[in-house]
Length: 220
Image (cartoon, rainbow, N blue to C red; front, top):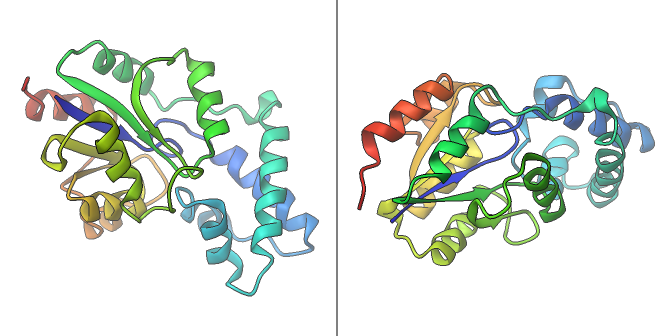
C-alpha cells in the first residue's frame, strides 16, 4: 500500500487572495507596512509563527500578528470575494485517487486543523484521507515530523510514500523524511527553487500529475 501526501495552499487550493488579505489586516492592526505580494506568498506553507518570523524578524510581534491573522482569515473566509477555489483538475484527480485500492491519501499542511476540517467538509472529502497533519500537530515544515507521523498513521514506509507540494518547504520536508518529493508548478515557489530543494520532478498541471501517478504507482 502506497501513500500520497498533499500540501494544501498552493497545491490543492488557490488561497492566495485570502492569505494576502488576512496578512494585510494583521499588519494594519500593528501599524506595520505590508510586505510585497511575492514576499507575503513566499512564506505560505510555514506555520504562522514561522511565517511571521520570516516577515518581521525574531524581534517583531510574531505571536500577536499570528493571532490577528487567524481572526482576519476566519472572518474573510465567509466573504465570497475571498473564495478558495481548487486548482483546475485537482478535485477530479483526488476523486480518482481516492477510488483506487492500492494507495492511501494524506494531507500535510501549515493550516490549522480547523482550517483543514473546513476544507474537507466544503469539498465533500470526509473519509478520503488516511492521515491529516496540520500546524497544530507537528513542528513547521520543513521539519520532517508531519511526514513521519503521516507514515506511522498510514502504516507505510518512506519508499512507498510521496509528497506533493508547491514550496521548497514541502520538498525539503520530504527529503528529510526520505520520501519522494514532487513539485507542482502552479503554486508559490518557482520550479527552479523546487528542484534545488530536492524535487525529483515538477509538473505543470493536474493532467501531468495524473500521468506521473499512472507511470510510477503500480499496485503493491
